[in-house]
Image: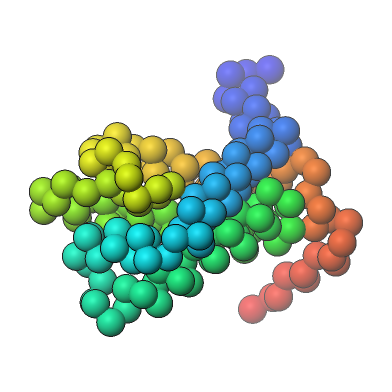
Length: 161
């Protein structure tokens, strides 16, 4: 077996997909818990980024944690995994852009990812989010073991254009 074939087989292995799927899903479920319990503090964190109009801060503070919880739970359970991975990937892209903009503007705030009392974010925060984005892309691209979706729902047919 060549090195390329071995690497392809290792990356496409369903157990690796399972580990990454459960890990990323659990991270999003964990991140949502504090935000759901303390939406006022999360709204202050969103406002500190100075990226969202003031009239949208409260709505975002109420909706985003629930989206994280739902998508994270779907990832952990293996239900509609591609849709959940796409939504989480989209959120991670937005989070990464917000981090880059905030770091370039020199605003010393915590990222607000898990609590409101975090150390000021740095480039390592961006690297962490990009790593999670890569894991999410893997979950989207490759199937994983123990997906409940396979037993609960019929797969959607491909539509020929």
